[in-house]
Amino acid sequence: MNENIRLRKGILGALTFIVCLWCLKSAEILFSVDLSFLGVTPHTFYGLIGIFTAPIIHGSLEHLFNNTLAMLILGSVLYYGYPKTWLKVVSVVWVASGIGVWIFARQASHIGASGLTHGLFFYLFVVSLFRRDKSSVGIMMIAFLMYGGMTMSIFPREEEISFEYHFFGALVGIISALIWRDVDPKPVEKKYEWEGEEEDIDQEWEIDGNLYERSKESKNTFNNKLH
Image (cartoon, rainbow, N blue to C red; front, side):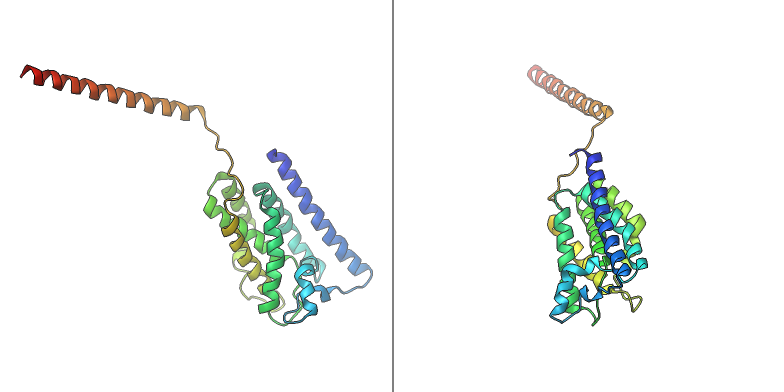
């Protein structure tokens, strides 16, 4: 797939998901409905549904706004850079981070897409350390420049913020990077004309060196015969 087309599809997909979240939050406000019960509530049977629904529920417009840009950028570059694994990463981070919260988190209703965004960021960061190609490093630099602070938000800071969702999202993102780091093909490196000339020069030097060694051996043989 053409890189420009892939980038446009990544942006369009991320925007579609974000629009759905804003429509859901708008409906919640318009009809005065509280959907926080769809969050992950640890150690409760009804809280299990939050594993699948919590990332689409936000406590306020500010909460949703804070996650919007991160979802747009991280989701777009994930699809652009890793077209074969992006769906696996999103799915596993979505579900596994919720399971981690349900088992280990504080007793509260944990909601929001922050766990998902942290998982995407840490996946992009860690996978680039293993792949080390231009594309993955460039994507990592963009992600780290804008959201490097996520490396600190996995620790407790404010009581009303679910750092547990951040932590387990990051943990699952790292594990996903270790598992699927080699699935997506690396981009073909472009070779410039001067690189070909350098190889030709090396070959010429090698040929000249071989001729010199052969002439030297012939001369030694000739001298030995004279003696």
